[in-house]
Image 1 (cartoon, rainbow, N blue to C red):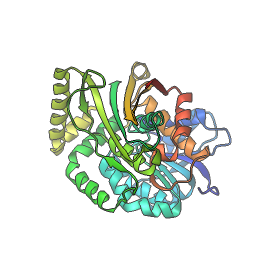
Image 2 (tube, one colour):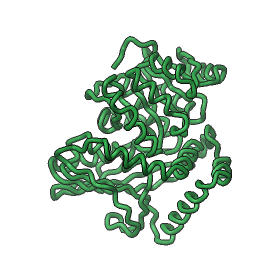
Image 3 (cartoon, helix red, strand yellow):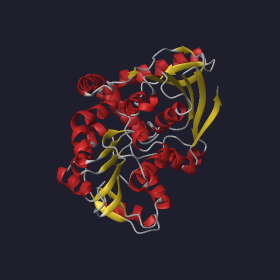
Image 4 (tube, rainbow, N blue to C red):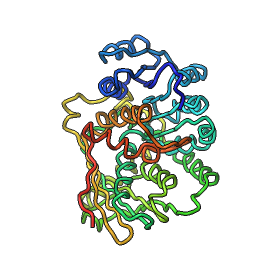
Length: 386
């Protein structure tokens, strides 16, 4: 990790809705000697954000479309966290600069194609430079990634492990999340090709197997209620953690589901997702959907305060079972901001295992980040262990 840098943490995209929440959390939680900087295109707006933090914060004008700008920004800091998405369109230059400069990189992407493309283009270089490239450091996919790791820790070492996650959520989808979801759906064919390309070059662990997630729709034997498989980045991230961490056993599988309760609700969710996918293939419809909630916008604080999420994880292995739960408040904004900010602080200031390349929150931060999140109200608990 480079230390002779001007900044400890740079937040790129600090003037957006989620970016401002991340900035505020960093301002509250970063130790006073920490050298923070806010980066983005609008210097006046950046200064407003920095002034609101009540501490000394640098302001750095930067443009994600300018290669030289991104290289200078990455070279100036130890950790760079970005909220500027959709990442497949706006994030390529940022991650490339971090991989080249040996700078730790964090984002909020939920885009599997971008995740795979980063591995193909930058994993090897990041391994050489020492950069840690950590994607999906918000609600996508910290609760799943750290929650599964927490569940695995309750089960015997060396056993084959199967974990199923059931998510319940009450909240508002962020404009950035909607933009990423539409980007993922419109680029599904290209993302599938990138996934195949990655599987061809990513070395498989010689001592263990990581199986694909289950995509069965129906009544869960774990909960007794109906569940719909989640075609999100969560299973991909957890699978990457399982490949990097021996503790996940010789044969591992994780399947994430949305807990919906009834067959009629399951049918409605599936139909809604299918309709949105179809609309995302037509540019004019995609733009109309995005206009309903533009990136950088979000709900008032009172509405966020009423939002929450609960992820229950059922794990089996070695003749034992474990039920764990990850819970928190507003997933799309408040808790996502905490997750990204605490991930940046963890990389910058905590004593962590030596890792490099494309890693995950579980594989490079794990219990240290989990402790941080518990301190700010995101709970990990064991409900039952048999």
